[in-house]
Image 1 (cartoon, rainbow, N blue to C red):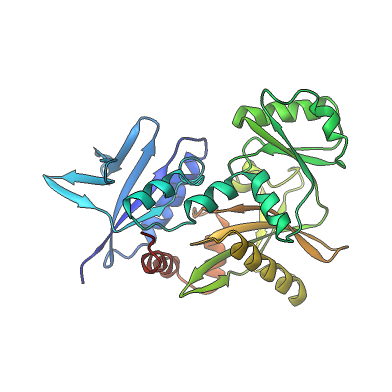
Image 2: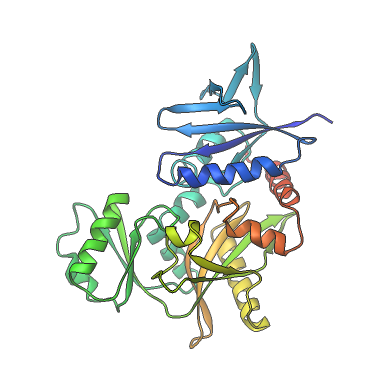
Length: 334
């Protein structure tokens, strides 16, 4: 049986590139070399390159997403997208791969673009009956008088860039005033659109969901709680060990069933593919989970939640990645 050529696509144009490299390294270490020939493809603002283990670099031919090594042209059977932020998480690469007919291990271009935009994602979810927090959107250059609009929200609120993940540029604000203005300025550094969202009271959970053999499957649920010195689950809490992640979550079967059912509904509503991670706040008073956001390319580093959930399920990571690859090959879109 011939080896499957995998382009492990990483890097990116945003501050999340550092997390992308960690994700790609985990995946590379777990892919079975007896089945897959893996090529590290680094996408940067300076160019797209294949990089070998000795850090030698060869340019990617963007006309067909190929490389030439020792006069031999290599084309890829699958693109394993391990790139957080743009252009890997916002649908740009997916559209490019669709045009070339190259299958990839993530949601399609439309779903990626919609879920990358937090405001649009919550609007779609709300229309489908999925509970979401009330929010307002600020657009740079069109935000005159925004303080008045915030009066419709109940504090505390979260202020965050509308596009992107990893909680970069995010703040929790307890009341209107100077603190809120500084939080908005901080978020505008990361994005031209800023979302101000009511804080939902409750416990925070994150749920990994994927599709294999045509069936939607839910990984063991993780509860996230931040250390006492952290105001919320931000970038620092996620990646610098300042949070506690309990997998599987210590919750009742009823809560677990409600979260799993809601996670499946979100996956179906957005027509997801591959593995995604959906963050929820469970409001105990209302006995229902609120969707916070959907991460279409969740992290796979040693600090990431999806690998924890896979291992809690009793699977090896290599086995899980093999399922994702096989599923995208079966469901290749022309």
